[in-house]
Length: 166
Image (cartoon, rainbow, N blue to C red):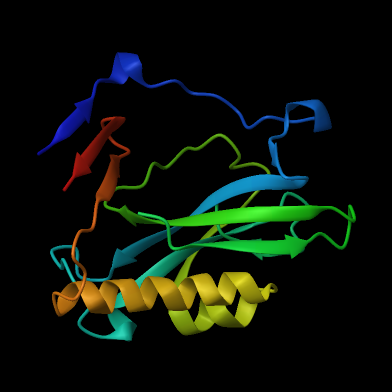
């Protein structure tokens, strides 16, 4: 089954800002992110070796931290050192096939493709490193057919359409 979302159905919006617009569950702020990944070989569909996999890391707005942009890899609960707030974070894998040259925060953040081992070095939070491990485990399990059902959401950035593949 393929489901296409036409360009007129896609809504471009910036993330919610301000405490009154943030979402909470049981007193914990909810945040959602993804680990954009790609294979060095564009035609590859499964993980043959770790060296073939790259992930996209972005810089924080202040440029001091490396982050992932915000079927689920997992859920993590953690406390913010800056705001003394508890967070509930959800991470999803995102296979990237095309990348736009221009993007909304290009003047505030940098995009850097790097290997899994490089990403583990620059990730400052334990849950980000664990999410990377889960991504590798998921892609490895996919290769050997150990994943019963994987839904891949593919964003074709050059056509602005969203495709869901079973």
